[in-house]
View 1 (cartoon, helix red, strand yellow):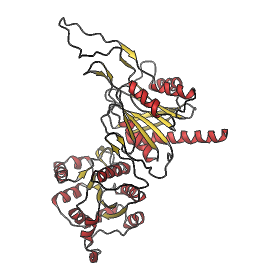
View 2 (cartoon, helix red, strand yellow; view 1 turned 45 degrees about the vertical axis):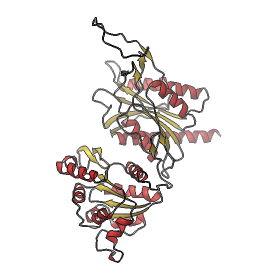
View 3 (cartoon, one colour; view 1 turned 45 degrees about the horizontal axis):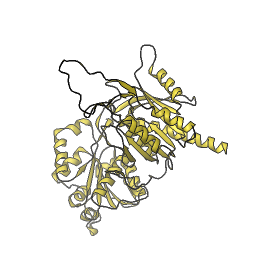
Length: 437
């Protein structure tokens, strides 16, 4: 694929160098077209070294090849990352003060723009209108993440991670029938799961297979009602994305979620704890690691009403009896102990609230010992804590007695921290296996 990577003058331009590496390592030809302002953040030499192509910014460079028209005409995909508020405004107005502006006016291929700016700029009515205008013209806009920005402020406007941008670019290209195969092409999720696989090169989990569960389970009460929880699935998705970025092959088992599953993973959808239990016992055997980030219901209605439960005429309230659900984490560890080929590293999650006598970490330590997994990620939950939020605080506890590790911040950053510890556990296990041979 012939790609034009446009880079505008925002501090997030340094992350676009990582995006460029993903593109070139996948075997695609990439012409980088920075704006003059972008070169204040990342120099021309860096773009040329990473792309292996000449880099130009001005309309009057390479005029013998009519470069300002040729690049746009020959491109099969244009990605502008980062796209500043100024560049969105100029593109919406059809202005072309530099080479990138000319490329955007002449390109007939799919165009993906990735905004990155401070929250006030992203939410400004002018920017909102410009984004709407561009979308109406067929330009794809990847909404920015919410999180830590350039200074001490946080909010929507954060530049998405390069692997997320690349996955979206590939999805857009595939939608338009372009051939995107390459040695580091992530798997693209289809309506029924995923298509063919590829790894992202080298990383701490290259060659590893990881199963990640995420989201909440729903236990049916009657045809229209269920018992559930507040899990959004964000943390599980972040762990899966970090594992993919680290080179792993990922199977993602998702329950009820408010976010999309991770691009590049094999996706299995479930609803109830019983379905999740079956999916884990089906997909975990043979994997190197299992990360149980799903918020699993501890109880379900003992009886399912075939018809909607009605209000009684006498004003009495229905009585709902509950029963325990399957303990998926414990069952997986037990199956491994019994000799089944379950993952050598199993990571559990402990969403705790604590009480007047026992702290969250004390509950977590007891759960780690009880479940028999190698690592437990403990966090304190509540109505305004963790569930559905973009940030979190966790403490990772280890069965081998090593010091606990704390992580806090954006759930993507915490997901990366979890994967770092997971990779360390897998490496340690590999060393022990070699010593036993």
